[in-house]
Length: 133
Image 1 (tube, rainbow, N blue to C red):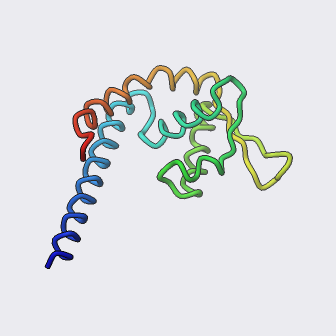
Image 2 (cartoon, helix red, strand yellow):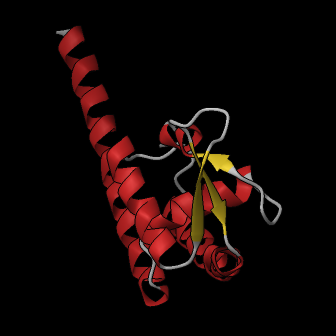
């Protein structure tokens, strides 16, 4: 009986986490939509800004794979869209031709700087009071 109670508690907690995640992603999507971005687009731009903070800094796509909640193929498609929009540039890694580098463009950095407060406001509103969840 105790095992069922513990299991039910974990299951309920897991569902709560998923619910908060889904609601937060939807709110980020709404906030960023007028700027032509979704939550996953922003997440990649934000990781690139953190991993490659200076203009022309590069980040290997492989280093992003484990940090975003997308499959490698979905991440590649997303980076392709960001590249088409002029927000990032891709280049083949000369040391390992299987590897691909991605770099934020000036346009990408500017857009990231512009929408960062919007994303952080959503996080504060959605997660600020639920630190113990």
